[in-house]
Length: 239
Image 1 (cartoon, rainbow, N blue to C red):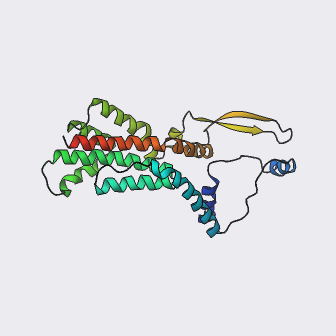
Image 2: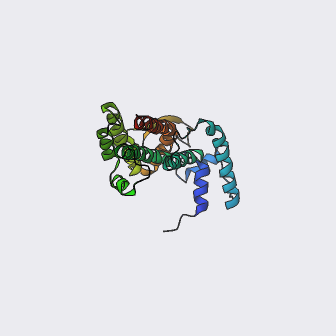
């Protein structure tokens, strides 16, 4: 199998999620009939990367002021906020959502550790080691036991774990895109007839297209949820 060069990665990133599916035999016919088909001229690696970064710069300038600041001066928490925000600036929204799941899990573990070890002035690596052995749902249970969250918050966090975090962490692409339909234009090149159809994400290619759209639509909402968890836990931990 031929390797996928970085140049193709950059071209896919420039293209975005808009894809036209056509029989190769129909493309020359469509061009003959004056269809607005753009032929992309070859780009050098340097030109393609420059163009990609220009797109990222324009997007980042619009988005920068909307990104949430880290609410507490804790180095690991700040690191995770930085990863989320950097991914969003570079339009890596799926990665940002995955990091949001990591942030929620770490915040639960971190504040529960602090609650269970009051008055300890220095970080106790042996006490923390047990937290690195548990996953999100056990961390939710332990935070509830420590009195950091109530039944309402536990239910919300369990829903987050099941409906979003686990699917993204394990790349359950079929579950992420299940029951999602998106409009597409189906065109007969011979007759020029067009009709709008609703396509289900029934193949891996369509699932990736749909996931990109879902990621872009949902990333800020997911980040705000993760941020609200961090802020709530930090306040509860000080009580």
